[in-house]
Length: 87
Image (cartoon, rainbow, N blue to C red; front, side, top):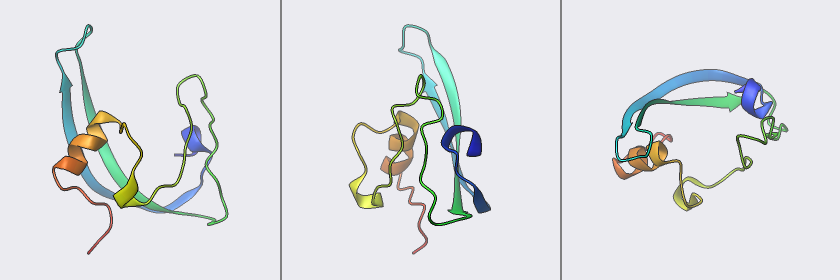
C-alpha cells in the first residue's frame, strides 16, 4: 500500500481473491487479485499518486457509487456479490 499510495495502514485483513483470465487479449494474460481491507494508520492521510506513469490517480468513493469503468477483476468481484463492508 505504502509503495503505491503513500498511505500507512493498520489491521490488514484478507477478504477474497479472484482468478482472472484475459485470453481474448492481443497478449493473453492471467491475474490473481487479492482483496484486502485495512484502516488508515492516520485518518488524515490522503493517497498520493506515487507512480503517475502507471496510475491515473486515487480517490475515495462510496461503495454503491464506484467510478466507471472499474478495474475488470474488481468489477468481476462486485458482480459476484463481493462487498468489503460487513453487514
